[in-house]
Length: 201
Length: 238
Image (cartoon, rainbow over all chains, first blue to last red; front, side):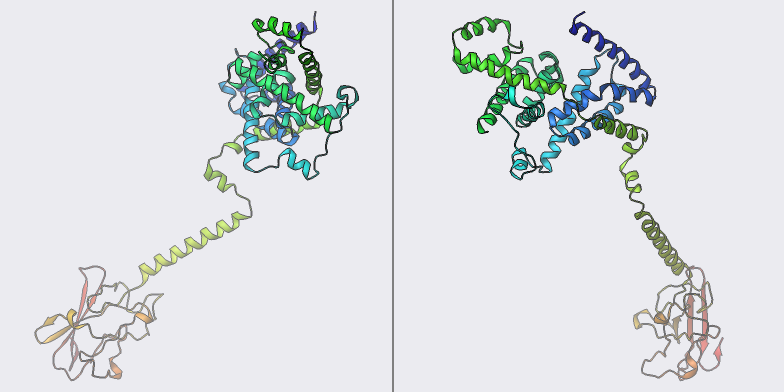
């Protein structure tokens, strides 16, 4: 059995299990709902973290996603695929947090860096070979933060969460052509950002 | 097409996102363009860094925080769905005693005001109606029975003309400030000592020089009840 096949069967089992818990949660079983939270918290928190770039904001967004899930549980049809629904709620919750953050006048990354709160990431001429894992991750996170909101959501779902273009389009409510364009643009911007950083150092 | 257009396609091609109809043309271009080949290598390197993020996991406590918060919230189902007025009632507990004190104060004031309205008899002079359900000056809030109730002459336009006499309206006492002194019809004449009204002694001997009898009316809130005193200024009350 290939890795993909075992992953597929695993996600199918997860979906079946989730459907059972959803039925129980709809009937008022909070323990079943907690199991759904535990099973899907990685998906929600990590996606939020990639999109928002801040753990505290990501936790707030994740909390909001699960509370919305609880509130609108009765609207979900068990015949549908659960993760895309959850991804869509996550992206929407992240958008809300971003808008709140913009309204609150949160400092941008450049402003934080200028004030010395965030250090410049370490880099080397051969980034792949010489950067530590932590430095690479920070560099990519910084690059993601600089992307426009829609491009960031598209590239996070496609390249980090590993969803197909069609799935991403469904989650973001846009066409596949739009998603391809956003993903292509985001990838090139990330590449440029990393190169610029390495040249500066 | 130029290299810029091809590079946008390369960004899709490295992850298998390029539509098959464009793949052959792009690969043909890559075979003869070193710049685009280098671009493709650099892009693959940055993409491998991006994909590395998928393996990053924060501290497990970060997940625990979210789960704990969510379960805490849903275990109090009404908390997030209270109407606005319930949210106001659920204000910080420090405000509750103040709110209760304000309510008690308002209720107390309303009660006292109502009592004043009901209990206070009024003096009617010259057509001002009042209550004489209680004896003159008998209201708890008004002056005591011993308080002198002086009656003053009505304004000329309110005077009811009767043949050979004048009509007066006297009806109880409200407050000292509202005491209405009765004076002789002619304001020039000084009041005599004995002309001060006592609660059980209706005004007598007002203007003793006047031969015409005085008519004193006690008007109550009930328009059907009017107490009329005829005062012969020489003989006293009839």
